[in-house]
Amino acid sequence: MFAGYNDSIPYGELIIIRNGKILREFMDMPDDPELNIDMGKLEKEEEKPIHSWVDVASYVDEDSIIYSDTGWLWIQ
Image (cartoon, rainbow, N blue to C red; front, side):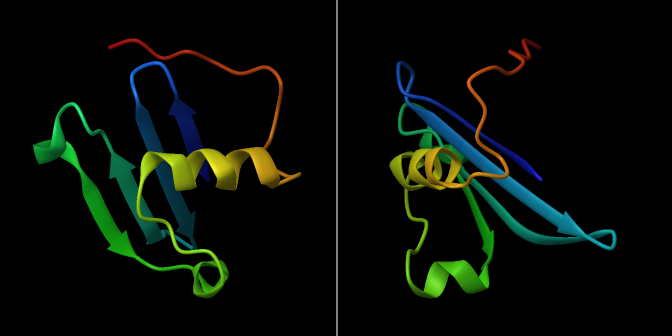
């Protein structure tokens, strides 16, 4: 699982892979909407769908498994 967001840009991305198959790929970048991706769905989304970077931020902050006060900043 890769999940992250940046509220100063704004930007949110979520990728979940199980057994080599992408179950969910979502990216919301309001400043550059042609890069947005919304593929697949999670069971968890029936209650709380992911439609924007804010939803990704909530997913990250509310999940005890993936939430961390520290992390990596990847610059390409």
